[in-house]
Length: 210
Image (cartoon, rainbow, N blue to C red; front, side, top):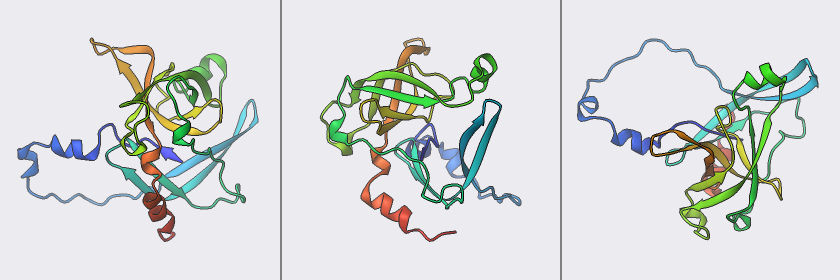
């Protein structure tokens, strides 16, 4: 399961800290409450009822040079055979012009208020551009430009190959024009591959249960 954590990489945020802030004296914070994060899975029981299954997260790994992370969930009795998942698309199968879909909850609860939608909404488009260029080695892949309509609530949704049903990216945001306005029909996505290296997966799998 993948999730969006930050709008800027950690190294960029650190670089933007002023010298004045860097040299401030250390401050102690008061008592804090620990909140355990959960991922929520749901099943539609009827048009008026959803069954929700909060699943506790025991480890999180953030990729600081990308807007991505990885979480590990504790087992849940509602999923004795494992959680539902999407397979990862083979990077060599990705080309500019490929059809893709994304899903999420555009406009949040607004679609439910207007249309009665209670489940994810799908949007279809194509890969307009592989960043920085098609054919680049996967370790140099930076993202995807999509010809795909998305809006608030779509961010963080999976980007899936229409032909294979496998995930290749996570929707990150829109593309701005010269006046800083979002251009309709254009969006960008980050690739999933940077958080799926053998070392990263081995570290998360090998962490002791909390």
